[in-house]
Image (cartoon, rainbow, N blue to C red):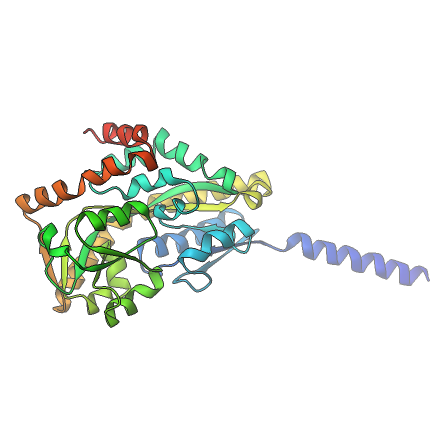
Amino acid sequence: MKLKYALLVLSAALSFNASAQAPIIIKFSHVVATDTPKGQAAERFKQLAEKATNGRVKVEVYPNSQLYKDKEELEALQLGAVQMLAPSLAKFGPLGVKEFEVFDLPYIFPSKAALYNVTEGEIGKSLLKKLEPKGITGLAYWDNGFKVMSANKPLRTPADFRGLKMRIQSSKVLDAQMRALGANPQVLAFSEVYQALQTGVVDGTENPPSNMYTQKMHEVQKYVTVSNHGYLGYAVIVNKKFWDGLPADIRTALDQAMKDATTFEKAIAQRDNDLALEAIKKTGKTEVYMLNAQQQAEWRKALLPVQTQMESRIGAGLISAINKQAGK
């Protein structure tokens, strides 16, 4: 009897020990390809996090909408079905944090330096804090780049957009942007864009070149205009309850891994977009057009009123603060 009891105690101890040694799983879901800046940074974070925690944390990365599409992923995070995401900043407007739509405003960031002044300063930190009541903790801003426009007709002046069906993310700002150009905005999940372009469900779209190239959108778009009219960035976020429940030393290690992954991501983002644009040109399937100074001025004139239109939604004070930070 004593032996049986001793065996039971030993079995329970071994079971407890195995359980204690089981790694903490972080499911990191995103909607783009692995070879985009975001995809590469997610893989880098996985390596850094697992090394920094000596294997106590295991990061499972799911790219290309393998787990969830655009509209589903934030709900999945809030429910705890995944622990980490890096959604585009436009995704937080529909969640009820409309201030993030400031990043979608056309021509609000004249340069990457102006952008980083915002994301790495007090404005960026205060915006991430606004996610906490939604059960979300913001860890970092990741970069992609400035967007190009594409279609199966040349887009050189605002008048060229008239009547075109242009795919956008779900964003009131992007909706207003396309309407300001005379286009008809169509909200579609990122994973559905290639087929929609191929079949003519939409006529064109906007994207940084790296997203366009890795999703092969250039194969079904004859013209690209390098307009740099808008910015696409991401916020790396975690389920707040999960994050707060982590041991303090694990959280510190993951924070550092995220900082290092963010430095890496920013370094490769511009390079990857430049390489993608060159690769698109080399295919010979798509004509790449650079706006001249006069055309840029026309685009700005058509799109800058969107900032005023969105003041009541985003906040006139926030828009003004960012313009001031950007040196306007």
